[in-house]
Length: 308
Image 1 (cartoon, rainbow, N blue to C red):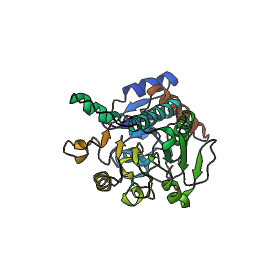
Image 2: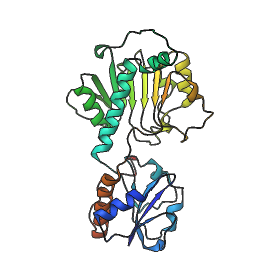
Image 3: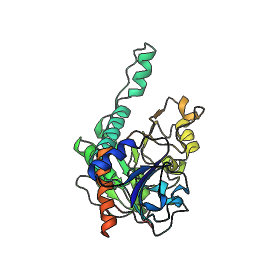
C-alpha cells in the first residue's frame, strides 16, 4: 500500500520528505514516476490532469493539497467510492487573514495610487477611508472565512458574513443564503472566500456588484471561476467598483495579454494569498493515511453533495 503525490507545475519533493518524517515506513511516490500503480490507495492531488487518478485501480482516498477540493470534485473519472479530504492547517488561515487585512488597509489608504505617484515623482495626497466609513463583508464562513472575519473584527473593523447555513460569530453580523441582497447592501469591501460549487460559479457578477454599498471594492481569494471577468471590467469602467484585488483567476497563470494586467484599478497577485506548508500538510496526510489503513474516520472529509 502506498501514497502518490500528483500535481502539475509544483515541486512535490518537500511534501514527500515531510510525509516520510511523519511515517518512515510509508511508501510515497511522485507522479508520474509510479512503479506499482496497483499499490496506491491514497493520493494527494493539486490541479491534477483529469483522468490521471484512473490509473490507480485500488485508490481509496484523495486529499487536496490545500483547503479547496473543487479540482478533485470536477474530475468526472473519479469513482464515487473514493473519499475526498482537504488540508486544514493554522498557517493557511493565518496567511489568508494576513493577506486580506493587508489588502483592506491598502484599499483604504490608496497604496496602489501612491506607488504610481512615487514612480512618477508626483506629490498628490488623497483622503483615506476610515474604519467607521466602511463595512467588510465576507462571503463564505468556513475555516478561512471565520478566521479572516475574526482578525478584521479584532483590528477594529465592522465585519459581516454571508454563508449558506446560519452561523454565529461574536461581533460579526451574519446572513444566510436567502439574505444575500441585505448582506450586499451593507457591504463596501466584499471578500470572496466561498467554495467553488455549481451554485457559486460566476456569483461575482454585475448584478451582484450593483447591490454593493459605495465606495465598493472586491477582494477575491477563493477561485477564479467565481468571477465573471468581463462584468468586473465593466463595473470598474463605470465606477461601480472602485478597485479589485485578485489572487485567483479562471486561467492560471494569467495570460500575458489578459486585459487585467493593464488596469490601474486591479491589483494582481499570483495565487499566493495562502500557500500550503509541507510540514503541516504532511501531518494531516500521514494521519489520514493511517486512519484509512485502520478503517477509521478521515479528518476533514468532504461532503460530495455540498462540495465542501
